[in-house]
Image (cartoon, rainbow, N blue to C red; front, side, top):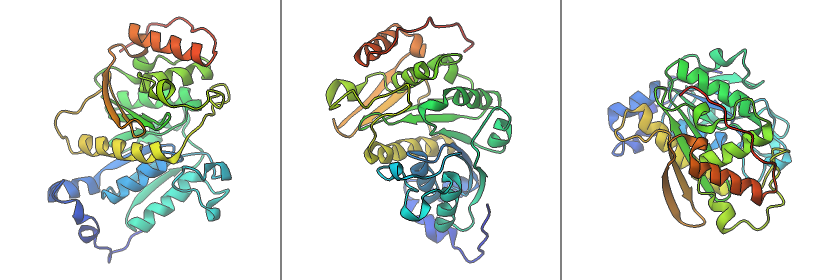
Length: 301
């Protein structure tokens, strides 16, 4: 989707960022291309925030359509978008921020056949897929690694936003989370624990474990961590795209919990195969009365 408006004053629209970024960096962001996998709960906020940072090139992928159950948290969920595809809806919302934004839309989602096309020309991949998409997430991160594309992944358990950056030449997504070939329930457990090794929500303030249903890929969620995640993720995207110093890559992760008013930076070498992480996974399964874990398989870095 492309809207060209020669009368749109890019500098005037986005110059208020200058001071925290330079004039040259603003125009550098203008030329960057970000691919977003999922534009529902967190992904919609990512897209809108990045557009307001001045980025003009996006690839948006989401096969889902807006429904009433999305209203408590999703940026594109309105009465007049019910039943509409999420990627198409967000593309239209982006064009209302900047009519010169160029968007490629994958309204059937991403699969093993179109991953290369999805990542074509992108400078960074931002993962906002649900836990039910473990296999395709692993495949996308593999492709990012093969094509030297940095990637950022965030989840929002409780009132917490948990982020990990993946460098194409450091520990891989798959070697960190170790989810390939596992059941979707087990993939969900490992994605939650791997992103959020402190399990702040279970330890401090969850009211009931009952709504957490990994087998149905469902669980409680509020809008608060989705908005927090946008600030956290888009800050990291800005820093990576502008080659800022001291970026922390996996096995480092970040957790910002607005309920507890806490920030954590956690180091887990080996990811889910780390002894501490195995204990976290054991605790999570026991707490939620889930099956015992399969053995970890050996994988490449």
